[in-house]
Length: 165
Image 1 (tube, rainbow, N blue to C red):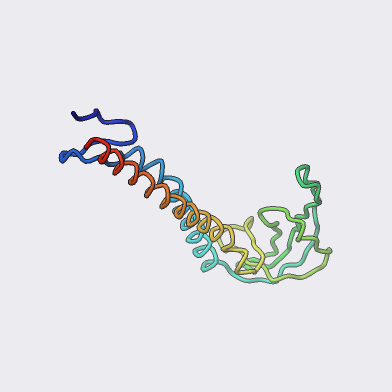
Image 2 (tube, rainbow, N blue to C red):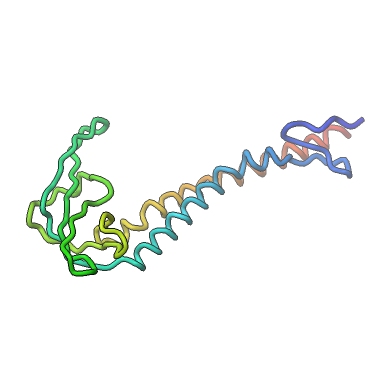
């Protein structure tokens, strides 16, 4: 007597129990999403770094923010630098940080996009790729968990086949 196909397992033509597409999505969906997001972030950072130009930026003002979650003071410096067409431009970084406690007049090497004056980054290669690498590592860890879950699902399918005999 054959059982009807279930939500997580189905019978094949040879009456073998296998995981359904729903099980595959449930087990492998999250690692794939994280790995793809990490690759996209790394590729985006790589393309930005390859098209960026280096300049020496001078801190002209620093805005302080109080982080209500951590209680830290966050700093967002505004840099003045010579843009690619020779004009003086002012831009700030994308996000404030407690590590950006710079004094007015400090000079730092910055990277800027020659197409947009608003976007600058600190010239630090590791920080440009760090978020993408972290997301990719999380995806790799989820892949290991998914591998164990997949073997568990296959074991359950085999036990269902042995149980019917």
